Image (cartoon, rainbow, N blue to C red):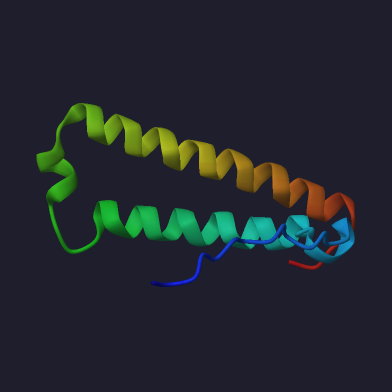
Length: 83
């Protein structure tokens, strides 16, 4: 019979070590948006076949990603970060 394995608690990490910068988060959001738009308007017509509700939801996600990206870009620019 196999031994029981009990997971230990995660070791605490200082916030400054694991915290992502606004520039890192912006890069992630833009990569997500690029992937989303490629899926929607890439080589297939699946988005049009999915129906109006699905298209509306996809555009809603894209809008949220763009809004987040704009906010992050402004935060980066106010801190003088290079993008």
